[in-house]
Image 1 (tube, rainbow, N blue to C red):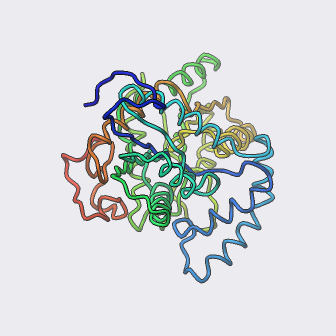
Image 2: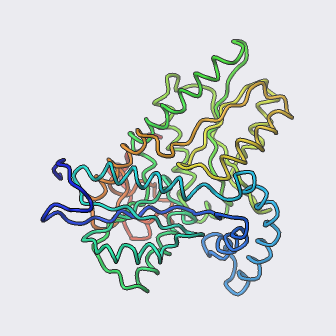
Image 3: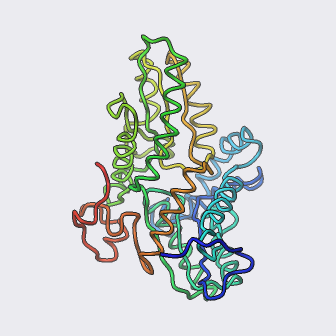
Amino acid sequence: MDSLAQFSTTQPAVGRPKIAVVLFNLGGPDNQEAVRPFLLNLFTDPAILRVPPFIRPFLARYIAHKRVPAAKENYRLMGGGSPLLPLTQNQSSALQTALSDGWNVKCFIAMRYWHPFSEAAVREVMDWAPDEVLLLPLYPHFSTTTTGSSLIAWREAAARVGLAVQTTTLCCWFDDQRITANAADILQRTIDDARASLPPEVPLRVLFSAHGLPQTIIDRGDPYQFQIEAYVAALRQHLRDPDIDGLVCFQSRATPQKWIGPSTDDAVIAAGRDGCAVVVVPVAFVSDHSETLVELDMEYRELAHVHGVPGYFRAPVQNDDPGFIAALAAVAREARGRGPGLCSASGGRACPTPHLDCPFARAGMTYSVEDKATVC
């Protein structure tokens, strides 16, 4: 393990390897003019729109065109653009500071659908000339639509630019107990505040709301839903009352096809029918963006009001919470210790055999009980 002696990242200690930590995230339009090209980038991604390649460009343009007005309004409600990049920059700066206690490190950001794209990040990494690269997705749960897509974009950009350096790839960290303990601490404070503001006879229900996916993607072996449910089970164990009334649900349905459920919309409506107040917890999100600031804070709050939910509360996401950054730094250190190559926060493959789109499965690695560190 590295020494914990401090040093400046601008004047590295002699002999210490230079470690580039690349943070993957979705990206978001930074102004109204960027909304349409952002949506085009999103829907032309084969991981998102799974149709024959000759159809995809035409269908992507059609979907983007239909969604632009509503998307522009959502971003207008957030000040004109997405806050995701500045929030990710805050996380990057905080993580670099945490890792600089022992590492000669610099953090870089590679967004998938808007600037800074992977190729720009690759060029910045090359200019810094690291000895090692650690790829760290800011998606705790692996999905082919998020981390998988970002990894493809990074590898293609690295090949074009000619970056060849020892690399460790962290595929997921949904099952790290420090991460779930921090998330539970944030949630517990929200639960306590909710109970304090409600009449004692009003029951409280926790809705663990994750971004949804089409059922067909899960059926093809994507491990995302499994990892979400395992993460929530682990998170609940850190709460004061692990048996609190709660439900895993999924938001942000975007196409007419069947999506995994239950939907957060239906869960909010059911809470009103049952006379339950709700605490909505964003899971699978570690940064605020339109799904939290508009969908959860505005649209579902209004839905709750319409359906008579007696209290609506939303737990904060982790953003650059100091406890979260400390936990993520620990995950990064352990991942580097397992590298180079592919690893999860628990070491090996964390997804049972049926999940064939787990990157370990694609690499031909088998699942064993010894690999599994989740609580589920």
